[in-house]
Length: 155
Image 1 (cartoon, helix red, strand yellow):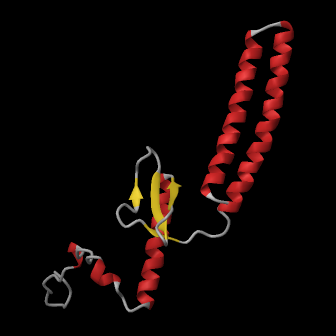
Image 2 (cartoon, one colour):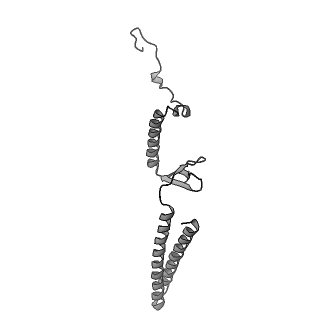
Image 3 (cartoon, one colour):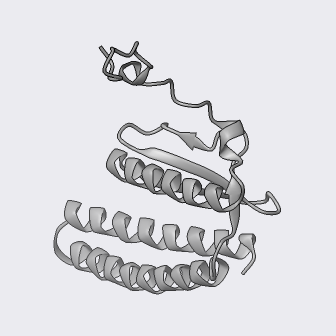
């Protein structure tokens, strides 16, 4: 399924849907035999639109079958363009197609926590490369060595 054929299927579906809506509007604004004729035409276009919708769905399934392998977008891997959504952006390996995943804030937080946990486990198994990438957490002020008393405990 090439992009031009997919575009044509979408255009044919849109045209049939538009025609059905036009005939429904005409039927609503007329009376008598005209109303019946327009209603029949609208029903006919609805049937055509249903067939074209299925052809479009089939074309989309054919074009998008299988797993998409993508790498994070190097310029903007995470965006918040739409209010209430976090968008994770990637491109397929040859760079010809963008992949977007929309998360709610809660989903983004859960996914982020899972990614951090997986990175930590993987980092530990691969000789600790994250230490050079991420700055160490500042020390806890309460754990800084305090002067010891005569009994060997902090005063």
